[in-house]
Length: 492
Image (cartoon, rainbow, N blue to C red; front, side, top):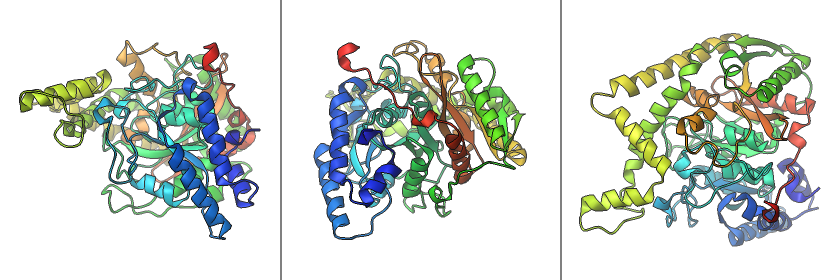
């Protein structure tokens, strides 16, 4: 098996015993990028030289006998909305095509402190607005399982990089499913942590009350290790939680789940869910019963209003957050004869169609005469969704559902119908509105060989519970071990 196909834990063992150097591993991943990047398009920027310098430094420290963290020397991709000091951070937008941040995001700094090797900035939907990574201003990312299909979004580059072996681990951001949805479509593991579990300092904001940074990986243990590295309180983020960071990875043990109560969400198993996805999730529920868990159906009555509420709250916050891109400070600036025309031209040239659509939706929802009818009602629905979850968690430890209603769709298939695209997030937006953790793991494949994702949700700060449930499923199945057979550019 190639180095780039192994898990971070497997590679860390070789690095620790000096059977492999960080430079050798980094070179192997960079060679993989050279081989498949033209086909997959995972990266906006590949940081080859700095990655090799970081790897050399890790090897020197290890040779000197320095105690290093468990992920030291592991190559990682960072979504291009995470600030990286001295490295281009574009958010896949023309608005920030020349932006080089003067500081690191807290998550970036923690990755560096853990000794991981950043090999590049992953492609994404512009300003994280999209579900297919087709909204990038620079390139379209393809799905490694079938390069005629999307990888999901908005963290499509992060998910595709891990699935294709262009990175061992990656970081994404999740505002309405942007980690979990591409994880499901690319057959990898993705976690949206509890809101506030990971600092948002240095994450370019889309919707501040929803955004959360999280890990993507090949299996659950890798995912837990990466979350341990980036989680924790940060005084630079006023929404950062003060709770300590448990050793989730060390607590993962094999065996059954006797006594665990799992609720299968009724509203996310009905109309609009592809039969192959529904069947895979039901088989996963049977697997959990075989592991000793008790599985029953549970209703979240307000779930049907989740998409509507989300796309009012998220666009309203986006309208506010993106007002800063006016051409005056650090962004693109259009030539114009006067200030107002400069504002207009800058935003017209700098933003793509989907970003403009969401800014207009959000501005409308916040405008005089419409605020109460739209934004206020959406926030009331959000409260009701939280109440539904609270009631469900009185009875159940974990809630189960598909991550996405279908497997990866074809490039261009949904771009003409924004509503159809938005509905791909129907199962994922609820966790963001409620601020709870949610984990997507592979649970099967459809007739076309495309991955199917299983979503596990738990109450706030229950990441350990979700990891244990996900790990138990992994130990009982083989889905996470499969790797895509890439189709290269020559035969597309």
